[in-house]
Length: 259
Image 1 (cartoon, rainbow, N blue to C red):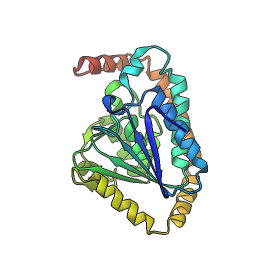
Image 2: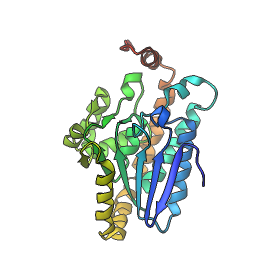
Image 3: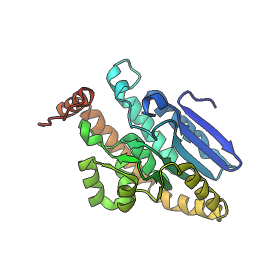
Image 4: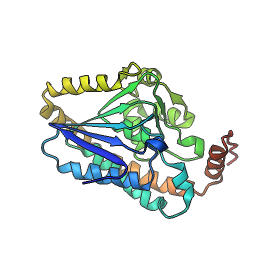
C-alpha cells in the first residue's frame, strides 16, 4: 500500500512508520489521519513483524492537528469524519500485535502527543517539546488522549496536564513518567536502534501476548473515551473559546477566554 503522507518500510521483523509532512512539521491533516488509520488497520493481521517504530521526518515528530486544514473550510477536515477516523486509528494502534516504539524529536504536540502516549515504549530526545496543548485552542484531547495520558499518570495527573497544556522537555516528561527513556540530542536513532536490538533478543512473543491480554481488558474503556471525545470535540469546535483560541494562534497573540 502506498501513502502520500507516510513512509512505511519493513526490515526483517521491524516496521518503521514515518510521518512525512516535514514542511508542515508533520501536522496531521485529513489525509494523514486517514492514511494512519489505513496503515494501522492493515497491520492488524501482520504475521511477521514484531516491532513497530513510529517517528517523524524533518524537524519534528508532529506538531499535532493541522490548524490550516481546520481553517480551510474545503471539506477536507470535516469534524465528524475526522473524529470517526481518529477513533478507528487509535483502536487499531492500541490493538497492534507487535511492540510499538515512539521515537520522538522536536515537537510532539496535541494529537501527535496522543499518538506518542499510545505507544508501548516512548523514547524522546532531551530537547523534545512534548505538549498536550489542546486547551490553548479551547479543545479537549482527542485520538484517545484522555485515556492514554490517564494510563501513564492516573486521573489526577492527567487532569492537571490537560488543563495546564504546558510544554515539557524530554527530561521533564521523563520525570513525570510520561516517557520511558531520554536520548541525548542527536542520538535518538542510535538509542532507538539499541532498544530494538534489546527487544529482538527478548521473548517478544510472550511480551506481545501480555500486551494483548492487558489491552484487551481496556478496550471497552478506550472505546467509551473515544466516543466521548468525538462528541465533546465536535461541540467545542463552534464554541467562542475555540474560535478565540484559533484566532489567537493565527495572530500569534495570547488568547482571551471568557466562556
